[in-house]
Amino acid sequence: MPSGPVLVLGAGHAGFQLAASLRQNGFDGRVILAGDEPVLPYQRPPLSKDYLDGKTGLDLLLMRPEAFYRDHKIELLHGMQAEAIDRAAKTVRFATGERVEYGHLVLATGARNRQPPLPGIDLDGVCYLRNLAETDELRARLTAAERIVVIGAGFIGLEFAAVARGKGKQVTIVEMLDRVMARVASPPVSQFFVEAHRKSGVDFIFGAQAVQITGAHGKATGIDLADGRHLDADLVLISIGVVPNTEIAAAAELPAANGVLVDEVLLTADPAVSAIGDCASFPCRHAGGAMTRLESVQNAADHARCVAGRIVGKPHPYTALPWFWSEQGELRLQIAGLTTGFDRTATRGDVESGAFSVFCYRGDELAGIESVNRPADHAQARRILAAGRPITPEQAADESFDLRAAATARPG
Amino acid sequence: MPNVTYIAQDGKETTLDIAVGTSVMQAAVMNGVDGIVAECGGSCMCATCHVYVRGDQLALTPPMQADEEAMLEGTASPRRPNSRLSCQLVVSEQMDGLVVNLPETQT
Image 1 (cartoon, rainbow over the protein chains, first blue to last red):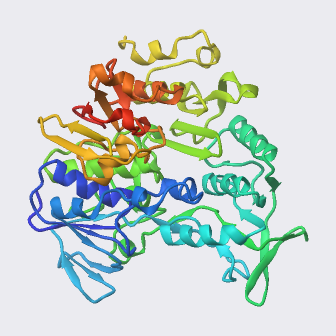
Image 2 (cartoon, each protein chain N blue to C red; image 1 turned 60 degrees about the horizontal axis):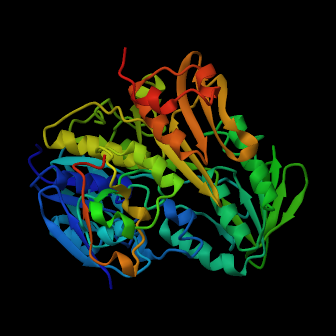
Image 3 (cartoon, one colour; image 1 turned 90 degrees about the vertical axis):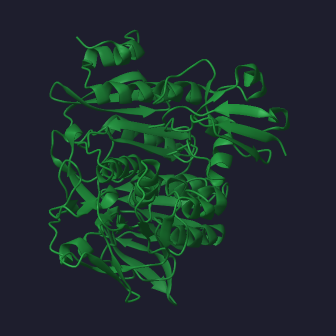
């Protein structure tokens, strides 16, 4: 165990879970959780769904009530921007000038919105959807907005579009690639989702690049595309992904490349510094050991549990199966495993019926399973992939093949 | 307000008065009851808010939907006939006095 406090930089899902898991594991040293936002740690997934829609309030968004931190002796530092790490002195300097000592430092600094270098990007009416403040602003603007352009057709853009359409707004999504969720989903899933969103009235423009956000009197009025087209809009959502917050690590000469580099127990090059969650690039067992950076609640929470275990003297390599979900209106997408680099798919169920799963293969290896409105498949998918059980494409596509039995069969 | 009692693995009991319309999971999280993780925030996506409802009280709880039935397949502690995901147990007047046991682990 470290002599000195565990200092966690970042109070998102990863940072919160680390502090909570340390206490759950009986750690009795000081735990300091420092976040740059002025609120108690909260859950991000509902921001783009029920919270944006006004169906849930801040009280239900909070990870835990204030008393939890007091009762568990977790020292919460709100609104504290970390500026520099002094690894020799084992201290972190904050923007307030305050220095905080650590025995072990955990970087859970997360990621920030990717901002395209577009003229007009600073105009009023250009919005993002990542943190609470951005969502509050967006929620307020959504009431008055009439025509909305979304740049980027990933989870966030599509989840937002579903909420905005539900409020009767005109929504156009502009995407540089040729399909939705191209980075995370297979073509059959992309195809199904684009058709479903079109049916609900969302317009899509694929293979299109925004070159300028137009404005008048400081307010956004639309966007210009590279092909010369103009789209009117009084609200523009930028949802083209995130970049990891690695600057503070890099400035302290900790290796970083699309994430702070960590080993299989999530340690950086410095044995007194770990990195977890969105900001960490780790060797992922489910990607053949390739350095991987993931943006998900599962990854953040499981990284945190792994590091908390190591800090209390129960080290184990990180092997958790990645899983993801998205809710877009009535549609539920659940993904187990990493489908990156798949070269073959098998579909289980009927795409037309709106409930199906796509099994993605890299060569003969089952890489991941995407389930659309088929939660039972997803539950089995997690067990199958975590245990590395082989399912052939033919079995996957055969509805009479018992997935549950395959997930629970004794090996050999 | 209806009350619900949570019994942890170590036998510790916590009784909460819960507003009708709030879920058994939400009340636990808002009141800092340990033993319910609720990683997905109540979307029936993660199966980390697993509880065992006292056997004779199952009939008081809302009927199980297909999503919950499916996700209960993936709980970390064994699924039993009285297993439920507490995010789906939205409290109603008739659930007053409900007792739920928390499983050994949620993850």
